[in-house]
Image 1 (cartoon, rainbow, N blue to C red):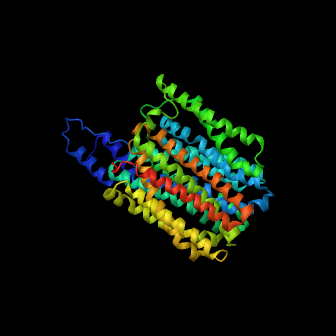
Image 2 (tube, rainbow, N blue to C red; image 1 turned 45 degrees about the vertical axis):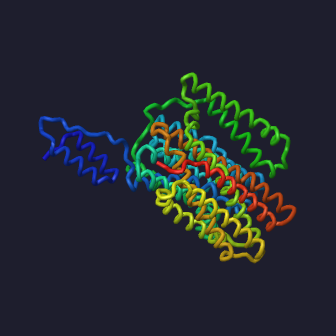
Length: 504
């Protein structure tokens, strides 16, 4: 029996997307329609299957892992490439800055040219730039390769949330967003764990280079999977890139993040203060240019209408303090474990395993808790996280310098569990009301905010920690930093009370 051509095309598409139930429905419709009647099909839009979701989540994990994986490799990079503190900070900051300033642009390009196409382009570029990092002969080459790697990540990551938003719905979207949140949190913790293992293993004498080279086969596998399993989607109202808005957003982020990241290592020269003075004017100019573009009928880089969505605006207001605290903690704990508590890279990684496992468990049970208790799950997560941070501070105050993995475990596990109850819910909340055809730019706004806040946390809490460490030692510096993080947790708790009680 022959099927109509349109049915065959539909079946092939569903086959690649691993949708057997819908293949059966398609065949049934085609074979039961009268020969004289042209079968009608309902356009369900792109559908993201289980393996396709795994593939895009792999693309989400790689950039986040690489933001943190380099932390434990910095001492060996310093030794092998004769890099001073300023260059080491550029190895970290160069990636983060390129990543942060280009994320919204990456989301807009995905809306315009196709999210699958940009995902594949970003994945390929990420693999190549990771290879360049792993083969870098000197520190400046490594810095340049890291900047390029951050730009590649900015092309790839916004397509993940945008594809989930455009190609899932209902419970499947809620589950996918929960898994994305779990992936995001786990990747941040797993980056430092994996980095410690790879540096200690010294595979074929590669040393620190393995933390970059490991991305190459993973990116190659991701390309093969994405080419077959990830559906294409794009905006029906795609607009050209807003050049003035892009330049002003880049200027705003650079004038804030560069001096905060490099200022301490450079001795706070005049240019750092001038840069910080420019920031509020650049941010104000960005807002005015975007509002004017919107009123004149053009499509701005960040449409003001998106920020008018209550769920997105309030969710972002929580993601900022949450990510500042998370980024700062992960930077500080890497120094404390290796330099303060004299742990090796593997042991330092093992100390964070309870956090990763607790975060993962909380992310999985979060959707069920949200269906029963709504966004109060975020408030409960903040309370649990605060208790965990307090336990870490108590253990450091009581047992220093003999604090070990077991002594840290209760605190880091509680903190991870609390974070796992917050981040996936917040990510689902901020994108819940974003229209599917604006998924790319909405995702770009979310991940830019998250990434900028992570970098801001490394810069601010990192600078606070290092300043106190110079004067009072690592233990007191850790305690002061944890107290600052508790203040950020208190802010998220208060803001969580303003969230809409129920989620769609």
